[in-house]
Image (cartoon, rainbow, N blue to C red):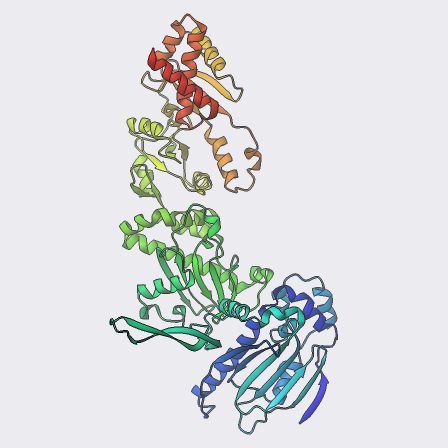
Length: 630
């Protein structure tokens, strides 16, 4: 048997295209060839289980080997093998519809995966790294003759009778000069660890050393010796392929450590398992996350039948769940996918919707069944829930039942519970319910204490996403305003239309305003004298709720708020005209005394807002020390 011919691709330009345009992702060749070998192995196992193959299966594993001297990489299996006719059918006749169109479309391509995925070029990715590729194969079919296929990267191929004695296929790559990095064991190990870690058929790559017990020494201590054993790359039965009823919490935690060796234990996990209208398995873990949550992304891995595809799962997993960790495996997502494919694929959209529902159901179930435990986890999972409520309308509707808010005393409420909690005392003259909050209880303690004295409750909103969350909630909740506890005087934050008389005349009021304006000496501080309780602070400095919130949203990446980020900070200075300090300033004869008292009061107000620093702070301390000595 000997035959020569031309691969039916209708153009001689195809191999240069493969080499050039797949080159940016050239390590993918090994995934493609190992996946093919695994597929062939699974087919022979299936035929044996159906009684279609009655021979001995033997050891069904895939072996990868590197020969640096010969500059070859081999991928061997004992799967179904191929006849010469099957080689012609599956290897030679790549059915490109319109090769000219292909060449034109991808001459400027940047996405190697898109090319492979659209045209089934898995096997031909071998030519990214090889000058010559050989296939030695023997079909499982009775009486089949071994066949050998050779191609040197041109459109020419040769098929002849092979010498293989055992069922299966060996693909040999003669590595080209530019790709000799792939002749290094550590490089192959790295690629196999990435793509083959959970393949369903054992993949062997050389040997590794292991320590085993070797009796005891004269002192009765264990002795160890080093032995060589097969280096098996993969765990062929990862836990996401098993039934949840067969798994323990320890199994899930152990697998998490396998995926993320240096992470803290997760809070909980969700086992995904659906077979209609699409196939999907996997495990999603809720990790303990820090506030710098951007650093935590790209921790979910996407697989197709246990073959790693990518960790860029933006379109498969809802944006707000990108902070989760874990594995998603779906044969309905092709091995090679491009971003444009994921964005337009119907199954991907269904998977995205399913995952959102599954996560919402799990959170709702945890809240109902284990509220105390759920509350303890809230500081870690609140970020996910708030992010989801902002970005996914359907998730918002479900999350209404299990989203929590926490007050400064550490008590948790659902949104409905909190509305009821504050309704009696924190409703203003226009029937708006007013939520007060702190983003830094330690720094805003004086304001929180003043609110408590009036019987008001104060929430804690201190995560990077809270400025966006607050804005969203105000749009969603009926007749509800959310204000930071230090955004204004409490009487203005919750305006109950309780009028106070100012004890000063109009002339005294203007005089006092002038003293404070001169003492501050800054255009971005606007001074007003108001009628407050004599027990309220003599001076309060605030930034308007709107301006400060817009700036916070811009700082955390809120689209459309850049204009606020570049605007200078402006502050409102409220002088309490009914405080005894106002009277003391007005009765002082010397301008220096008036200004000194005003400056001290303003600096105290600035200190309470964390605005006093540098020379101003040094001067304040010096002035305070001098006052103590008088």
